[in-house]
Structure formats: C-alpha cells, structure tokens
Image (tube, rainbow, N blue to C red):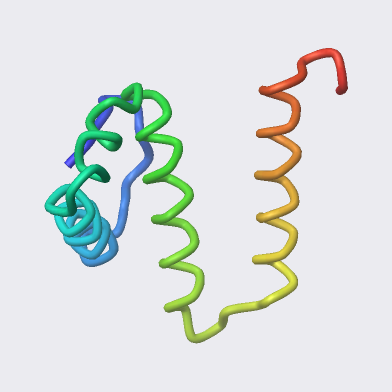
Length: 87
C-alpha cells in the first residue's frame, strides 16, 4: 500500500479494495512494472481519487451531482497541472 504521513484518514475497507486492485494489476504482465515506475506523488493522487470514488459510490446517500462536480474539479486540477498558464 502507498502511504504518506500527511494524508487524511481513509476508510479501511475501501483501502483494502484498492490494495486488492493494485495487487491484481501488479500481477499482470507489463502493468505491474508500469505501476512500479509511477512516481509516489502520482500514485497517491490516483489512490486518493480511487478512494473517494469508491467511498462515494458505496454511500447510500450517494448523490450523482456531487460525484460529477468532483470529477469536474479533478479534471480542472489535472488540466491546470499539465498547463499552468491555462488557469
């Protein structure tokens, strides 16, 4: 599991699911080496996104509009990271 000391508390059941996904991907030819090559900061961003997406979708009070808003904020963050002059 990828960790940093400054991350917010995460749901242990969701993190178990993410660990299982990463383990499964890591066992697949080619994908495991690609995952290993990803910088730790990027891995943590991916895990953070997966965690929030899984937690949201498992929430009985799940609101699709909140999920869409979250996806738009993530897209804008990525766009700004790739092209700092755009925003």
